[in-house]
Image (cartoon, rainbow, N blue to C red; front, side, top):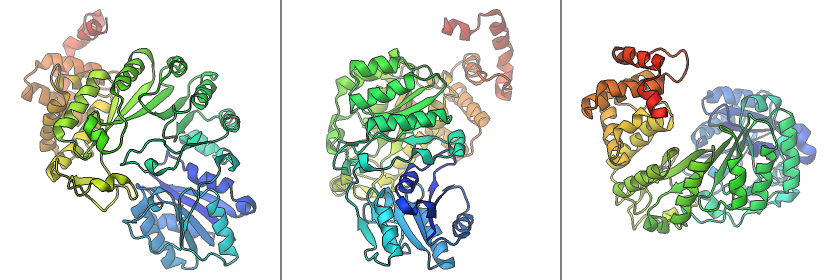
Length: 498
């Protein structure tokens, strides 16, 4: 029996830890099983061709919000070309119903953690005893699972992020998140995990992305993992998703010890409005959040990534704007702005009537409007989020972008800038860095009426950080004075850095 495990990652640099868990636990079928990974940018018919080349009996496909539409097309083609090939689906997008993309051509669906279930289903298919199309699984015992890390290839280690985990589940009940459906938090054997990480390290792995929902919940495990990295020589990169209100002294001392560029912490704030947080069953400890963000900002070299969501039930644009202004006053770190999604199975659906929540049924299932935000409001905020990424989060305009708001509201001033820049481009994509800089310069000088030379000097500081970069044409009239000042050490750059 020939079995292929596959998925379509969102980009080439990503890797699928789920496929490797399935492979690791295939027991006597491991020798009959192969992993083939693709990305959503690959041609679907080419993917089908490669999957069917060796005439597999079974193809298992991991289905996620970013690939479900492509998977539906892939299934359609496979079944047209090779109808006898059995297709098994698993992953978050098929774990809860309703399915909003037509996946009827699939033969079997495993709902839940399929580490062991996939193997058992393959055995049943081989024995012609697989009767149920949809298999609802109980949670496997993590400490009995065979770990997947040896199945990252040398090519994976060289070119991709290595996804790892020390636990599964989340203790919180945020209604917009699939993790709120988990029964409890379960941990792997820490000693075994550390042994596997050491092997990965010796093989050359340096980019570790932890998929745990609450890395800093279990202090023993968190400290053990941090100690592992602190015992190593940089460079390396470790990414963790953490809760914002739990940084005890032992954790703080270790985080402070990480060198620049080695540690990234993703913190899901989502909202700072206590009533909105209550609406979605989210715990909000403002004093701890402020204290811990200040600690991370002032005392560590960690790269911080904060999340906010547009469209939560009961959250107006004014409330969202207050959230953004508050976070910007607390931190200079990256702030990721997302649009609320209605994932199948989540409890966010209970607000549909009270707050007139209307969502798209097309992935990624974004909110379209609600009682607080019109469709036009949502569209503007999607563009706001995109332009925020291109200008503020990118770091390309670290100093000059702040001229938009100075001591005023960040939200109100960037909102106006977002509307203006869209009027000039009629697009949020394929805007080159040069064009983006020219637009920012024009807005600051022509709309905000700021001094052109002062703006140009800040933009030159931002844009000329990379050696060898040519001075943009729109800044050349102002660059001579900047270059002369830089040579004698009296430029605005040196004064501000002093």
